[in-house]
Image 1 (cartoon, rainbow, N blue to C red):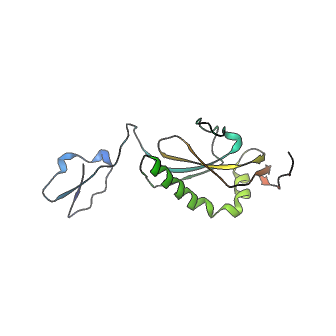
Image 2 (cartoon, rainbow, N blue to C red):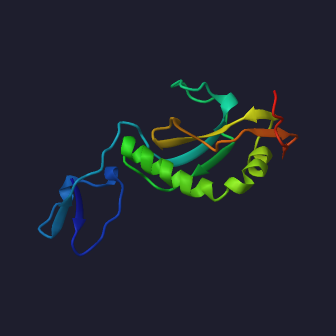
Image 3 (spheres, rainbow, N blue to C red):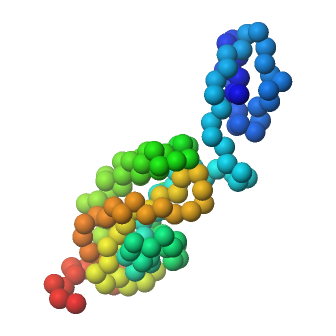
Length: 153
């Protein structure tokens, strides 16, 4: 159990707390879910291009994300926590959608032809989870600059 003294607010990680801190002036609060891993990964947002992963596959995307945003937020290590992390990522990403071609093309080190950008998240585990959310458009980049994708391949 986590223990929080009524007179003093103690902020510490689950591993730093000890049941020996129980006293008459303490209020018991349930401990968060912990994993056997050495460290919990905070909510991390990654945008991968469609050429970096196989749609519908559980395999991890190849290479580095085109865009990466690490947040300090810790969410529950379950599906609800993944949704909370996804929503937090969307809050950040939506603001930049109008400039997304310039941002995306400037961040990748290769040419891009008619690829979609998908949001992946990491929450608790050092493992990307595909949210299946896309900007709904195709991107084309040449030498770090966006251009209008042709209608035919």
